[in-house]
Length: 322
Image (cartoon, rainbow, N blue to C red; front, side, top):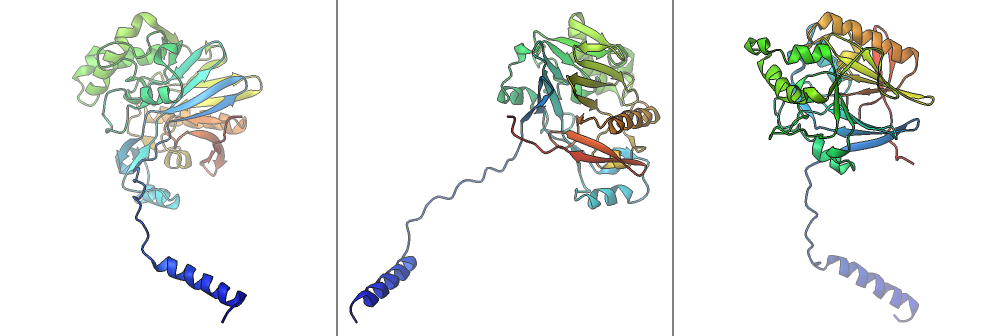
């Protein structure tokens, strides 16, 4: 057979045969074995905000950290929300706020301490990835003086990690967590010893935060005690936009929001912490105010709504900053 039909058949047979011939091998792309968002940038009015991760913090089984639930209730809540029941993992979402006049960091992560495992202590490296150098910061504002919020103030050599920044913290927390007498308490010893190493060397550059007062222009402190004696949330406002930075008012986006009367193991006064939590989130619901939570899934930005006797978390979709 000759002509176009034969030519077409020859081409098809040739193509089929070519697919059966051995091909040169190529090395497969290596597995990277990591997925770790480091920072996320957005706007609050005229302010530029950047959430920077200090890394995940593992708590283990929920019963070890959350009290007040019925048998099996915590596991059911986690399973209903497609979350593992054998290890509750919290994020650490530090906020950098550029007001145009000052560069402010809220909380400093775990630093070199590994009280909650090896995945923490990434804040300094991630700040650099986000474009910040430690010497640029004018202020470091603490929600409270627990290890995962202030142990990144001073480096292993005893030098301030943020050498030009004033440190803002509630006096009640400073006094409580630097109290030498508490070193005799086995439960608190490591937290107090670490807080003394972090806070006492910076006393001469420290400003004590007061309830209802501005820390820097556009940032107002709200005393929300219970998790610690001086725990502070912060209302951030620029123009018509606002944000409630909640610190540790709620440690989990499901367990503590849907069951806000659960008690958390590291609360200084669990009943008071519950009262502060409900009051602050009720305010956020009423005002439809966006929330930034330190321990919710990265980047911890979203809204809360009422859901029965508790609240529901609505994460804000991450978007490219235009």
